[in-house]
Length: 274
Length: 333
Image (cartoon, rainbow over all chains, first blue to last red):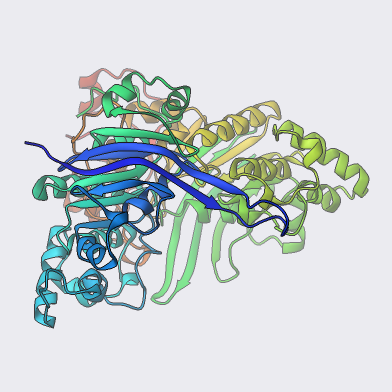
């Protein structure tokens, strides 16, 4: 029944640093070392790590924003890094990204309509060319999905709160009707009360549309809630991976234990509430 | 040691002056640590900036802040400079911007000593080394000449803490000191702050949006919403009772490790209102589940908890008379 949507195979990424002087060997940093995982359609995987772990590099490679040094990213069975430019462009609408900072990721000079329909402007998708009315219709539907009103389409980002901006960013990701969404710390810049709303929204959307998520986060309490599986990354290396509840209940690696211990103030009544 | 009475801060905005801090009062005794919790726009950082005398000139401050008996509101800047960095130490969120990128780290740590204690540079440098060792900067003696960009985020925060402690302040103000750090580093830095505060018998004002972080860190907590303190208590009772509906909502909204995959979080409806749009009456009324008409009339005062159905029924025996809440309906179902 389930089918694999995304597979990451032996993924390596080496960044070259500038030479110290012109005679010396170029220095390199290995940002990802042999990363492997598979993700079934409709499921969520969490990439857990701190700064320098390579989690953002991994997101960029999955989104085909950068090329790996070696290894493959198979999306619906096709290696996206082996595709022609045209073929990749045709595939792009199927994977979208939501970024951490809802202030930095929306262009302040563009209306919400323009922002949300941006992915549709890129190329005509599946040869459907949308007229302004069609675009507006699609944008209204996307805003409705994320709990905003169609009257919001003609406003600008500064008129919205952080949580609403993140809703706009999610609407932008949804508008191409993607099957995969890579969410890079989508709630870590939000207030606690708003964070809960966005987490619930993203879970509702997953259920409604059968979306597949790659969550990038350092917060194990969030991961526990939204991910079926997690991959713990440190310095580019996978320390452990598997079903979320197994790893959180029985962490093998000392680093995973440290991450768990660092989740601040887990309430004593945590399991009994609600 | 620190006493804030009826502090009001107003700010000019495009839509006229708004009252960002609405008459708050709180005390911190010597050696006591107080946590100020709130989301964006709650007024928590403005409260801290008022104590440090760092509010922009366009902000108007009324009320009184006394520090060791000295009135800080309206104090001349020149005089304030003798307190700030000397008697009052400060740690900010982002160590990369709070440190000066063109000075080596020993100089940043020694600056308060050069300025306030008029130490000779060689003595100050030696002193700085002692401080950097105290905040457990690894290989401190080799690193006196390094610059902030050569250090990691956690190390930079240690340098900032060393600088804040240089003159042995009576009060340490830490505004989101670990928000920009990785979680594992966060924990180390918090432990360090706790240890130093205890060793030096300093008072601590810790500001954060993160409830969980406060639990092991402070003696008392004040919860702010819309420029007001809505609940104040010792840490244990606050975590046990969570009297104000907003405090309750904040607790419920936090993802917890004990939850199941796919579980939905309990949310507080709506979003944090902008200060200009705050309702008269209780600022939380529009988002509150217990709201009745009376809530929108007058702002509920911060009053000690009294017994009510919730307490009698639940048998939560002793209430601390210091536990205060700004909601007369807190114990109604």
